[in-house]
Every structure is written in C-alpha cells, then in structure tokens.
Image 1 (cartoon, rainbow, N blue to C red):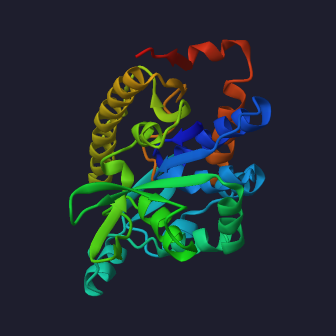
Image 2: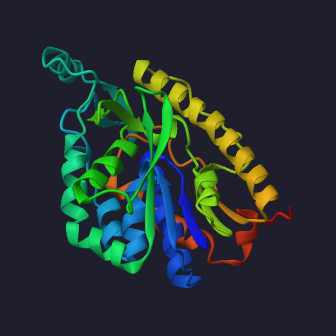
Length: 304
C-alpha cells in the first residue's frame, strides 16, 4: 500500500500543496492512505479526492479572517516587512467570555465544512481510500489518529479542525469529554502511523529544513518569543518523529521518500498571507521538476 504523509507547518502548508501537486500530476503517484497533521490534515482530504485545484484555490486566497473569528494578534506592514503585535482587546474579550484560549478559530471550522462537503466525504469512503488526521488529546495527554473510516462527516470535520488548532492562539475542541488541539504537539510528522496501517511505500512531505540549521532574526516582542519557542519545540518533535519513522521502516522493510522545504519560508507560520502562499505553492511544485531535485529528496529502502 502506498501512503502520502504531510507534516504540520501552518501557512507553509501551501508549499506542501505544491509538492503534492507535483507528486500527483507529474509523477502520477497513486495513494490508498493519506495521513496529515495540522495543515497537513487540511490538505489530505482534498488530495484523496484528487481535487488539487480546489484546495490550491483555498490556500492561495486565504485571509486571516478565514481562520480567526477573534485573532489574538494584529498584522501590518512596516517598512515593507510584516510586523505583528498582540491584540489586547481581542484577548480581553476572550477572557470576559470565559474562553480558555487567547484566540477563536471557529471561522476555520466553518471554512472546513463549507469547502469539504458531505458529498466529498462520501466520495472518499466510496473510493476505498482512507484519510487520517492527527490530534492531541490534552485531557489524557495522548496522541490520537482519527480515520475517515471510523467517523461520520460532521465528526470528521471536527477532527480536521482540532488537528489544525495551534493552542493557545486558536480554539480547543471539546468532544467526548476531552479537549483536543493541534496534533503537532505530539506527532508533527505521522509517518509511523502510516507504517502501522500497513503502508509499504510512503512519500513524506516535511515542512522543515532538511539539515535543521536555522538563523532566525532577533525577537521583537512577546508574540515573536512565543512563536519562536513553539517552533523550537516542533523542530525537536520533528527530529524524534523522523528517527522513529526510520527505525520502524528499517524493521518492517518500508521504503520512505522525504521531501523537505529548501529554505526558511517564514518564522510566523500562524500568519496567512495569500500572496506569499501563492508563491510558496508554486515554489513547492517547481522545486522537484528540475534535475537538482536530488538535493531536497531523500529516498531510502530499509532492509529488515
């Protein structure tokens, strides 16, 4: 069985979309299993449908208000550069309402249901393909994997939404007596689950630099500090995920092909700029269409 796995990465998901378009349209890859975390969870249902143009349109026309009902930060251009600052009034409103997070991302929940319809969900079921999204259960402190085979449409949309919610900037999903958030908190690159499900070949799109070497600009405010700390945590999780995946592949004779970003796209993956994301999508698509692709792709056959 062939599987496609897409890591978390916020707005950098546009780059992953471009790589996925290359794999599906140029390489004509066929997958039976699609596994995603966070932004990867938003992409995989449409990729399972083969409807690249629809998800491309969403990712390359997105606005902050399509994600946030209450955004905990403000974004503006300063000397041609994107600057962010805390939205004190928005956060105060959240506290007054008794909410547990600094922001409210119910707008994203509505966008998911509007874009991914019940008819789409049934089409995936009928095709025999499986879509799995990764969520973090903050109540039980466990990672959970939610399959399109195990839930009905509305529940599965909730799991997609939860997988993409970067708490505390975004909402918590309260469901079945537990509180759920971004799957990236525990499993940023869910390769091991694809192997667990029986995949013998896995294409893995990793929204991190291959060598893991970063040279970030100085921090400007508390929001930057939070973002940098969060990104540091995700980098460490990614290292662990890749190590575990390689060990599992080695023991089960699974072929893995990794696709990494080729440069630092952004240090603020919670900002959704349509112009930038359109460029990133095209960049991801074009990265592997020339002869230098070997620099960014690692394909390894592990013998048990």
